[in-house]
Length: 487
Image 1: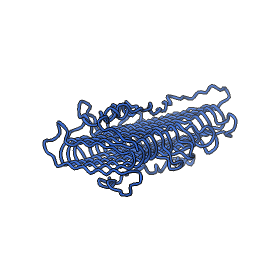
Image 2: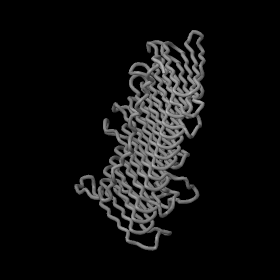
Image 3: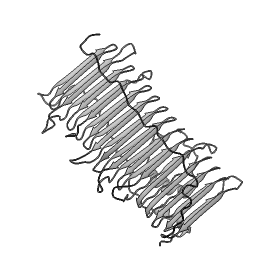
């Protein structure tokens, strides 16, 4: 049974070795245009001025391009564009196709379908008109046959816009940018067969009540998911799944809500070498925040890295890492930062972390009042950390497995700390530290047992409410009806 010398706790946290972590952002598609490097390829461009316009383009072959421009002029919109590019999906057919749609105004709809490899798709809606609203994009690249190295970019400005993307096979990239309120982005990526190198997806949302869903599944590695949300009442859901016992290595997931910057390496090794060496969570100069946001992240596989950053009040974060297929989950780490730079009177944040596997680290860090933190680690070489600054906070660490140890610190009054450890053990609890509130009423409850212990306490002492990110529901419409019959 490994014993940890508590006096060296801070030094040990600073000495933990963390791998480099930065999710690979998908590259912007850029302007595609109606051109092709092949003299025999199909190319096309359509320009429509006014409202309630419709265009439908279907191309079969290789290195095709189609560009559609719908300029509503009067500011209404209600235009529809449909582009489908296919081939036999054998050899080089269905290869290097390009589709581009620009729609101004509101209630526009775009549908883009591409089969094959190395295809590009670009959709711009609203066109920097913040009065635009209710635009929709549905894009699919690939079938269950051949579809690799595809790229997609969607840009929407205004309110209540929706974007849905499906990419199959492997090594594709999707980038969605939405500016406004009540927008929704849904990216599903499926890496099966062939190289199964995974995908990269990024969603950027600036506004309130936005939703982002990134769902990545496949046999291979290199799934990268990044969600950046700036505003209040936003929700993010990221899930990365490996479908075999040997896959899923190298999945990275990052959510930042209320910041807009992504300085990472898991925020410099779990926030400057371990929650500022356990305590003293700053409420210094950085001020932007996001209140009432939800982040849910799930990773199933090995060698995963997950990070959530939340700045503000009444936020919820839930992280789970584990490989239920192979029983291992190597090298995981996690970070939640809530209201770190906000008012010391702010609060109401909840954070939960569940790690199943090896070499796990956690963190949390909360500033203010009425916070709840839950950390569950099952596996080897685990470290927990967690620190809270304020009053009426609850911290709960439950560790079952090898060499686990936890340090938690609380400043202020009426705080509770619970630690339950089996096997490696060791703990450090500090309450009402220097510069804390001048009162007490703090409580600590610690249970330590060897690997054969049978009593289970602590896990539910400060259980969290369910975290529901309000997952995104269907787009609807996108019918492109009555082309030809008349007006």
